[in-house]
View 1: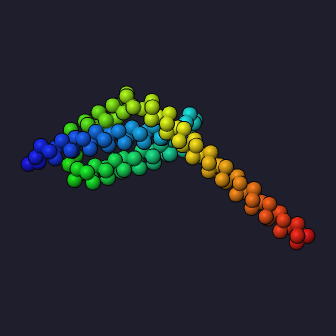
View 2: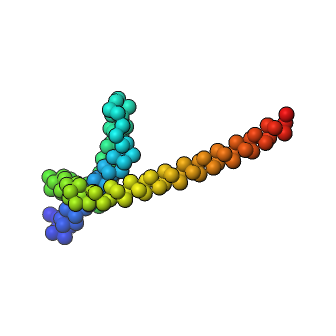
View 3: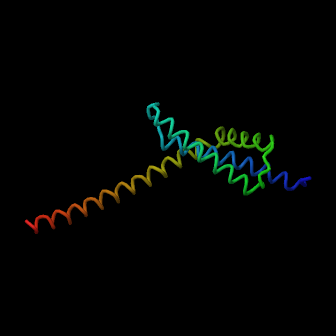
Length: 129
């Protein structure tokens, strides 16, 4: 029999894994956006949810010792609903700004590197002619 303290921790970790699930859903919505529905989008969506399912399962395995009962799934569901109802709007905007900022930095770095390599490459070609 599992004592009360461990049972409370199991429910808390289940609730937290539901919140992690909700955050990953927001990240997915930001990355995919409003793309057209086609076969490749279905494949991307399926792969994403399989990966998220594995991550949540590993989190639960690490924190709960693989005790998966009805209450575990119920509290995961409650965590997702809580996140989507009360936290999602704030986190969605902040994560969207963060991801757009990171993508902008990578785009600027990539363009500068390409420009530098093209300048060096063009100088070497002009010297050889």
